[in-house]
Amino acid sequence: MPVTRQGFVLGTAATFATIGIITPARAADFELKYGHDLPAEHPINVRSVEAFGRIRKATNGRVNFKSFPTSQLGSDPSMIAQLRSGALESLAMPGAFLNQIAPLASIENLAYAYPNRETVFKAMDGDLGTVVRDDIQTKGGMVVLEKIWENGFREITSSIKPIHNVADLAGLKIRVSPGEIRVDTFKSLGASPTPIALSELYTSLQTHVIDAQENPLLLIDQQKFYEVQKYVSMSDHIWSGYWTLFNQDVWNKLGKGLQDVISREMIKAVLDARNDNVILNRSVRDKLARRGMKFNDVDKGSFKAKLVEAKYYERWRDKFGPKAWAALEKYANKLA
Image (cartoon, rainbow, N blue to C red; front, side, top):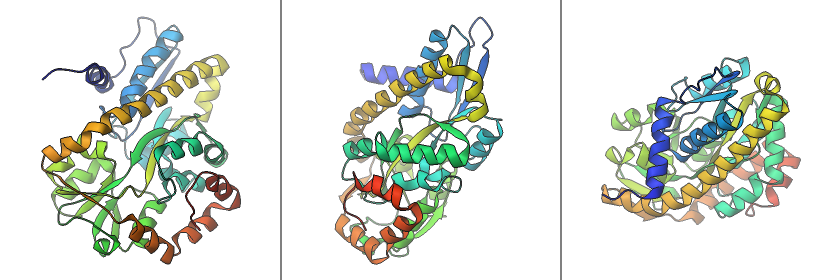
């Protein structure tokens, strides 16, 4: 099979992501660990590792990152705790996982808030993102870099039946990633959601602890859920991203010069990864279909109507407060 340039770039970087950054000849002034729960071959990890190489070169070896994908450093709550204590220097983390520390961080996950990814980026690169980052930094004591990584719009998979409309979700045992808003979304839709870490999800599906899950297509492929799931229902119910976070004390010790290099290269990495998602998502649906997964469209109107009936938007408008909601409404679909 021919190897495309894109495949070579992603595959090579993923290899380096797995083995970590090669230690430069001179000892680095700052050896920094970077944790997250995604596979090594995911664009977020691949482009992070590329950025770390550029950072090492631009700082003459003073700053050396090592990536730890696939929850190697612990669960998401554990990595957040490690970051805040200083045991871990940096990580990539979904906003929804930060909601107990900074409630506004989960606003990116409000169901059917955004009509498309272009609107998401206008919001998260604009006023809404500013409000979210301020909340994380003020309440969480963590430094948040400017741009958010894209994980993508999430789809529902199941081993037992396709989901055509909201009635098909009634009582469905579905895994959701940890985070209050994701649990509440599926409760409001009538399902029976269970929070399970990504690292434990495949086994939970394989043993039928749960019958369904929801994730972007790229992760469905990379995590090999096609081996334990049959149906993919294209619900596009939530968009999810990852913020790049740093321990505040570590960030301060770096000083402005090194901070600027890191910020610049990580912004480039985020934008590159967003482009990767466009390229990869063009083929991933066909790839999953060839592996036996059956796709169907979803009556999204029935989902939205059920959320309105459950007063979902009113509830989250009150939780997020008027300032964040006003920032959201500059970009969002009409909600509450």
